[in-house]
Amino acid sequence: MAGEDEVKLLGFWASPFALRVMIALEEKGIKYEYIEEDLLSKKSPLLQEMNPVHKQIPVLIHNGRPVAESAIILQYIDEVWSNGPAFLPSDPYDQAMALFWVDFIEKKLIVPGRCIFRSKGEEQEGGKRQFIESLVILEETLKGKDYFGGNTFGMVDIAFAPLICWFHMYEVLGEFKIMFENKFPSIFRWMKRCIERESVKRNLPQQERVLQSVLQFRRHSLLDA
Ligand code: GS8
Image (tube, rainbow, N blue to C red):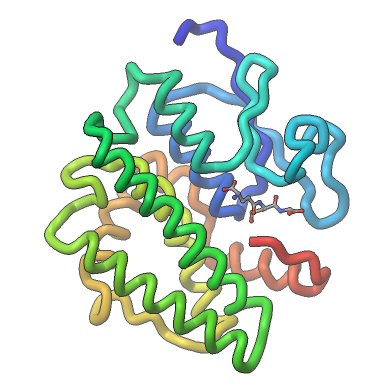
């Protein structure tokens, strides 16, 4: 795309969905203006205008036009800035599979993960069970590969990598240990590989800060991971 593109991102620094977009923009080398939303006290009029349906971050605003929903934003970035490294494989079947796993990460990992830090008792235990089951499935999918798509960092990696800075919070608030090195060795090695990448290293916050932020949200009972 030409240099006159104006790109803005409405986000929240700890949000795994916003972090996906930050990583993607950095991977493509796209310059953008980052606008932090205050999800704790008041959403900005700009967010309400740009995402009137869900009123959620992240929203990418490209030359004044908004795109919402992180998975859709990642596909949009990949299409528009197709001269950068591709996030999706070219084969339609492989593309469908990558999108399947992106969807899986939200539905089967991030959503049950909310029960870990929002609830207690049976609901929390159920969240932990589902979370671990999903990690088992992702471990199986990744086995023998450097990245989910094979040799290169792509869509599924971008969708999953933000959780690297969330695992500590899940463990502390869920009072359990994931034990990556022993139980999920492929994911363990993949995490090490990811955090070496500039796009991930530069955007992922410290895990301790994420824990403090979730505790703060919990105190306001306004949680929405
Ligand atoms: C989820 C976005 C979301 O949950 C996506 O972009 O992939 N499916 C969407 N956004 C949350 C913050 S993320 O931790 C959000 O904006 N919450 C505020 C609210 O719902 O009011």
